[in-house]
Amino acid sequence: EPEVTQTPSHQVTQMGQEVILRCVPISNHLYFYWYRQILGQKVEFLVSFYNNEISEKSEIFDDQFSVERPDGSNFTLKIRSTKLEDSAMYFCASREVTNEKLFFGSGTQLSVL
Amino acid sequence: AQSVTQPDIHITVSEGASLELRCNYSYGATPYLFWYVQSPGQGLQLLLKYFSGDTLVQGIKGFEAEFKRSQSSFNLRKPSVHWSDAAEYFCAVGAWDYKLSFGAGTTVTVRA
Image 1 (cartoon, rainbow over the protein chains, first blue to last red):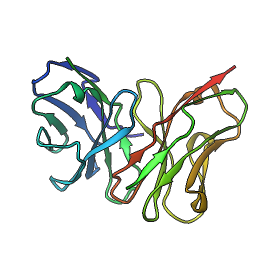
Image 2 (cartoon, helix red, strand yellow):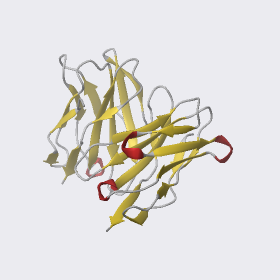
Image 3 (cartoon, chains in turn purple, cyan):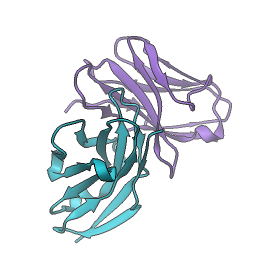
Image 4 (spheres, each protein chain N blue to C red):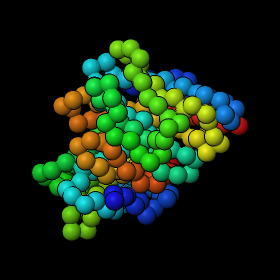
């Protein structure tokens, strides 16, 4: 089965630093998503992306967050100035236009110290 | 607002026994409903989904779920669990845009 790939699997950063989480969606997929799960809490929707622009974003996705598809294969989430409360597992997901199955990556565990 | 409640935080079941995981949702329109499974160190894998039609849906790994609109429920079942079914299970609700709301998850432990 095709896979969504996320790198790195773990990232540690200092508070106030910028961090970029990387994802390689499945090659023919056109809709992209970021979700996150703070330890002990629910998986939360952050943002969806289609046709090189944000389709929807949650209240969590404030000006500190941005997404980009810098080339034909990568999809990134940038946190401009990390806070302690940004520590979480971040999941990337993608789907085809017509396929109803949403594929998730294995996640990047971000720890902000 | 949409939300999902999974009342059981942790369930322990014997190998070969049946399993039922509960899910109740709140959604303003006809929901899209999903069950995902997460094994340690792995991503979220889709077990099954319901969009419309037959209210009993079959998924992978021998799982099925039944949509009951009157009870706002979408419970997951498996007739006979295997040790490899030990994992965390998430119910989610959303719409065509896949802006999903997840439940808190149910951890399933399988004892020999």
